[in-house]
Length: 179
Image (cartoon, rainbow, N blue to C red):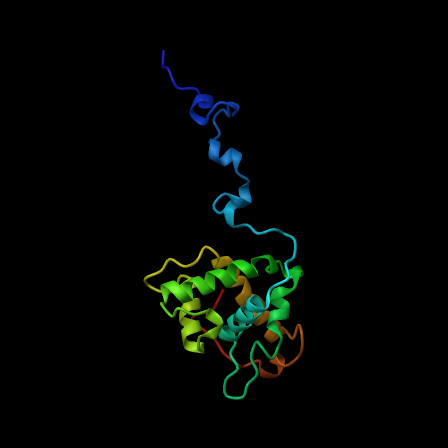
């Protein structure tokens, strides 16, 4: 007779026998298996002034104000990113911390993301998206891709004002920010 350790003994005292189902899969919600620890509250947050400035610089990195053309800041992209309807609002504090940590430590600027120039911010964002050869990217990659999509939607869709719809050909295709 083949003697096996009961699943209950393997998992610990108070866990019921789970049959043929893997314990980790049965005990973890399907949507949150890989990163349950990083899921924010679904309650909308009120961003701090630092978080607002950082998210505006993130949007400006995606669609910059260059050569006199309006960008994401002029189209009020932050208002769309922050709108609880789109679901990105609870991630603003996590993305701000992630960007500032990457700016300070990984890129050794020893400063906040919002204080860097466009080219440095673009390099940091590409790294957080996993597009740098030396980095797997951030655990918040999906949130960054959501911010990119909402910034483009806001600008090109005229969600907050029509400033971006006047420049549909600008900024053109980008190899670094296609979600």
